[in-house]
Amino acid sequence: MSAPQHEQAARFFDSVSGTYKDKYKDRSPFHHYFFNERLDKATRGLDLADADVLDIGSGTGALYDHLIEQFPHMRFHATDVSAGMLAQSAVPTACKYQGHAYDHPFAVKRFDVVYMLGVSNYLTPDELEKNLTFIERSLKPGGRVIITFTNAHALDTWLRNLARGPLRLLGGKGKVLSSGLGSWTYGQGEAQRIMKRHFNVERIDLLNHTVFPFNQLLSGPSLALARRLSRRVENAAWLRWLSSDLLIRAVERA
Image (cartoon, rainbow, N blue to C red):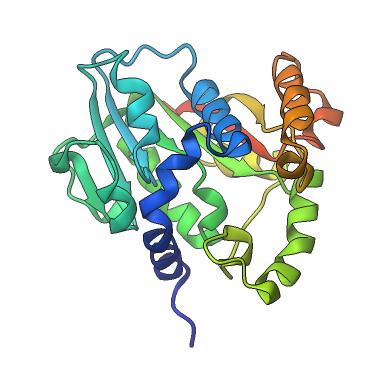
């Protein structure tokens, strides 16, 4: 019998944790663009100066690094199933928790903002529901939750799914596509319905207007076009086909 999904994810991310943080730097143009666009859109317009922030699936702490200079007095809490990823994070040790957020006896019981970025695609539907239920009861009045979903209807998603089998046969050590990890994707309508069971949806942003494998083989022109499309303010249906991820911002349902 294979190990549960969260154990497989923990082992995989432990194995790549030593170099994972480099992906946020210029060494990998595609990952640098993808991760930093997500951070920018996930934090835009929020005042976290005196906020309690929870980052579920915090990884190496990129969100913390992105926010701490601007909001040095925020109270930031991080969870992740991977001990290796947390070990690479600059989040203070007392505020890092290995394992599932819903299992931790947090000293802070309510949060102003809860983030879950790049995580839902690794969660089984049951695990996703457990996390959303936990977040729902853990928000302060008027609190926000900001979550990304991998877009099931994106051309990028379709091509990555086609590539999984061949890449696993070829070995691709250290790559998510060849890792054998389960992956769950959602269309915009389905993601909205899931969120509306727990929260009031405020807005949806489209992320990463690139297509595998051109975003890495032809990174220059691919990323130039992606940056141009990212500046569009309307959530056009045709643009969803070119957006690998959906970022949903929602508020506590009073």
